[in-house]
Image (cartoon, rainbow, N blue to C red):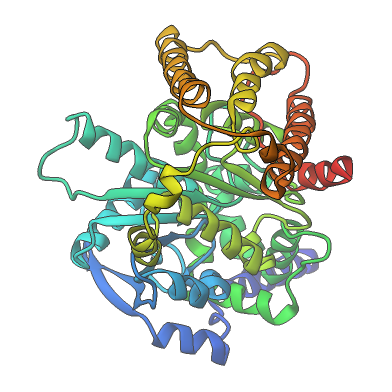
Length: 469
């Protein structure tokens, strides 16, 4: 009898403690988080409130849509928000249902199509059609679904009544973008397990486990401080966020089920794509890099040394610099266009100036046309038409220059001692030598058996500089 009382007491204590823990109020927001939330607004999507921020920037063009990942929120974009505003006309971020400051309903599951519906709805409500997307973590998968819908509309496969979102560019940060071989983490597997996941998300997944899990995804020298972790935890707990984590994590299965559709869309789309990757992320390995280089291109991937899974939080200025370069290559600013239009045309005097042997590029053209293809290592097949057109151009261009120099140009012997001729000849020989040496280095970036187009990455650039010295 005494033992039964002890067991009953222990059982009641455990149940009571669990109930207190489960329904204990979520921690309050810090002043910084409260200010961020106060700067946003809400819209209703399928009878639920969606938090978003929509702000005008100082840039000349472009609207940026920011899509965060699992357990994240619009607040995670805070370190690059103002910099993005400086270079873009408009910045928009919205918390998915189940995340951040939005409602977190007890849906049976949350899938990628549902989240994509939300972002299309939000853009339509805000009167936005053309967007440049930046996504991180699970947000990459949502962005891939939006790309797939974009391709469906182009190919006439989409419902004509569905919201139309014209994606101008896509930049993804650390996360899986090709999911055919995606692995599910142990904690995610536990959360997906029936009933067990509900118990873990509500009773076991406390601040200590949360902070430990998040910190492991950062680089060794870029760990978040305690206040940042507490802010993230408070936002995660808001509106019973921990209580629906086992339902929200269903996206890990959904992205595997839709791997072919999403991979094909990213592979075939003409939308410019860019991948900014932290090399200290334990969750991102060589398979992700190899898949991106295989399905997209090698030159559209850049690596940030020392950063982990959240480069926009760990190395925000590096992310901004890289993204700015990417956007400049995609969408030139108005000032650049005006500058190009206002450039002075070549003067008649310059046009009529006889071409001297010092500025004649015939030898350089011959070197690029004949020698480089013979020396290059590996390579991909080139259509015969391109080769034919290039040959025709070189013949015509060479004839024009050669005909002028041999039949019309007049130079006496004094020209050989003219300063312009001597300086031009020295510059030609120097540039010719640098070109040959640089070509040699670039050719050797391609490893034996590789055929892809090689662009030096940050570490390669340093190596190139040392070799050129």
